[in-house]
Every structure is written in C-alpha cells, then in structure tokens.
Length: 519
Image (cartoon, rainbow, N blue to C red):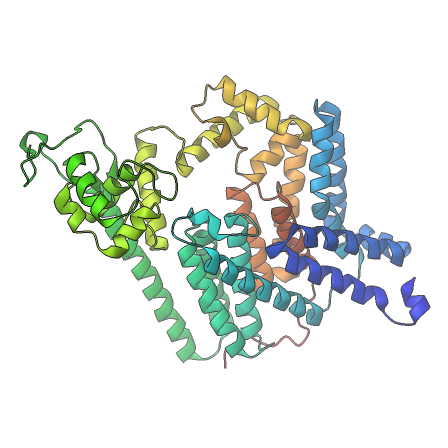
C-alpha cells in the first residue's frame, strides 16, 4: 500500500525497522520486544500483498508446520481446564507465531540488511553487559549481574553476539579492530557470569568456529595457529577441571579419633563428625570455636558476628565456610589470617575465597552439587538436584499424558499436582516446569505438538544455510538451549528464539561466495 502511494519500497524499510527494534529489544527491554512484534505483523497486514504471501506459504514446508503448531496450541485448549491461562500462554507466544510467519511470507532478507541487524544486536548486547557489570557488586547474587533479562537468556544472547562478531569480522563486513575488543569483553563477561549454560554454549561456539575456519582458511600458518590455540584451550581447561575435581574427591582426610580438643588459646573446639558439608574440599564443622571467632571478628568488622551478612545469611556461617575454603580452622587464629579484602568478601556474603573467580567458582558449585546429588541430599538450593526433581516430575506427567498432553492451559497446575503425588521435597518456590522445552511442549500439547516443535527447531539444519557458519551456530545454540531451558516460556526467550530461528531460515547468504579469510 505505502509502496504504491510513495513510489518507494516503504514496506521493505518498515520491515527492517521492526527487525532492528527486535534485535535491540531482546537484550534490554520487553516493551521494545512487544513494539517490534506488533510492528512487523502490522506492516505485513498493511502491505496486503496476500497473493504473494500465499504463494510463498505453499512452497515452504516450515511455514506449514508452523501454522499447524499455532493451530495445535488452540486445539489443546479443548482439553484444558484453565482456558484463561491457555489464552495467556498463547498471547505470550505471539512472537513465536508472528516473527517466523511474517519473515517467511516476505521476500528473503538481503544480506546487507542481515548484517546491520547483527550489528545492532551486538552493540546492544555489549552495552547491556557493560551496564550489568558496572552495577553488580559482590554482595548480590551472581544471577543479579543480568539486569534486563534472566541470566540464562542473556548468556544465550552473549554467545550469539560472539558468533556474530566472529562472522562479520572474518567475512570482512566491518574492520576487525571493531570486533576484537568487543569479543574479548564478551568472553570476559561470560567467564565472570558463572552461567553454566553460557559456558556450554561458548564451548559449542569455539568448536564450530575452529571447524569452519579450518575448512575455509587456506593459510597453513593460520591453521597451525588455530590448532595450537584449540589444543592449549582444551588442555588448560581440562587441567583446571581435573585439579579442582581431585581437590573435592580427595577431601580432607580426617581421623576423627585424633582431632585436637582445644585451640591454641586453650578453648574447647566443637567437632560435628556427622556433618559432610565441605567447602573447597575441607570439612566445615570441625575445629569450630565460636567465642574466639566472635571476639576477633567484631574487632575487624562493623557487622556483628551473631547478625547477618549483606545477603541476609547468618554471618557466622559465612565466616565458617570462608575460613574452611582457605583451609583455616574456625578460631581466633583463623580470623587473624583474613586480609581486609577477605573481610569485605565475607560481609558481602561470599562463602568461599573463590566465589568471585568466574569459571572456577561455578565449577566449585557444580562439584558441590555433584556430591550432594550422589548423597541424595535435600534438593532445595542445589540447581542439579532441583533439575533432577523437575525431570522426574516431567517424566511422570509424560507417562500419563504422552498422546495429547495436558493442554497448554493446565501445564502449571498439572506440574504442581505431580509434585504432590510424588511427595517431592522441593519447596513451593522451586517447583518449576521441566527446564527442558522439548519435554514441556510434549507435556502441554502431546506427541503432535512435540513433533511439530522438534521439526521447527531442527529444520534449519536441513537447508542450504546450514553450511554457513553463523546460521549453523544459531541453530545449534537454539537446539542446545531448549535442552536446558523452557526457552519459549518467557517473552525474552520467545523473542530470541523466534528472531534468530527466522534469520537462520529467511536471511540471504552472501552471493559472492567469498571464502572466509582472516587477513
């Protein structure tokens, strides 16, 4: 319509504007995500080129399955009790329905426009990460480092931005010196963020990047350099993981019959020989002398020993765990070993001297959770044990409703009922869905919904774009993320998923066929 009035390709640029708004919004603002979604569908409706739309739908298997997936959402309301929640779920998933459908019925996005979308996305992710890092303080939970959306969703955005940086710099779309500092910063941010999903996705990015660069680079020197870098990276990471694991496996060997009964100051120690709680491989509840710690701690800190730290945790417990992570006894001597920065860390709620050490801190938490997993401990407070309960509950539901599911309106209700049936030890605030999008979709919409979703997410790997580095990376990241998260159950996750799934299908590759070159 506007094209005819203005004698210009107005709808083409309105379509691009909507995509740019989405690319910016997915990292910083839900309102922008909503505006972008409404904008892109409104532009397609006003353009009103319905004949061309229908011709493109007829030729595209993906769009047929997407339409079925949309309609099956509505069909599942027929066996849902909570219809209102079902419509709310459908409304929230509007970007999943709208963005791929509109991009599929429009002309393929030009490679030039595609590159500008990636640029806006990269710059927004970089800006958001800087704001996150500047505003984060050690007294906060590490998950609060992500201000604008959940830390896991932002980790997905970070990995996509890293892949986009590498893609644009290697393709020489923009000068490499623009992207190298950004990539270094985003890798540093990933290291510090302590998001396990982020580490997994970064490893996938590294493997795919090396594979594609090896395949397309002609210079032997560069191939050799990448080989050395890859080997060194794998070796260093493996050694770090091995040494840390050994520290936990070879926990403090204690002969409880030989424990000293008195501190150097002559006060009796408290030893709980039944507790297996450890910190950095050392037992927490041995060599404890509260009176001495209280006296010495109150000399070096304004926070009372019997009060709480800045995370509202009992301060004495934080002190004990921190001293244990240092390998010190919990007495006056141990307190005197604390440096001023250690005191600040404890006041801020850090329970380990490694709590701010990025990857190593996350590895410590993971190892601790592994030991709790083996001991079948209380699942609350442990990501791994909670996931075990989520999976157990999901498979329980799947066994009862595998054919047609419970209906999208009843997913939350049925999960709660299943937790009660299984007498789960999870507290109410930790009783979430399966944390696996494939299972959640199957439980909600049955086998047909599961097959449709699986087709949609895997389909890009069977198109010609699969040979392109960034499009392949996008598909693998989305497939992997859906294994660990209910990625299409929040607005940010849905928009990230929908936009990049659509780009991997409906954005054009460069026509010049230039090989990837770094120089």
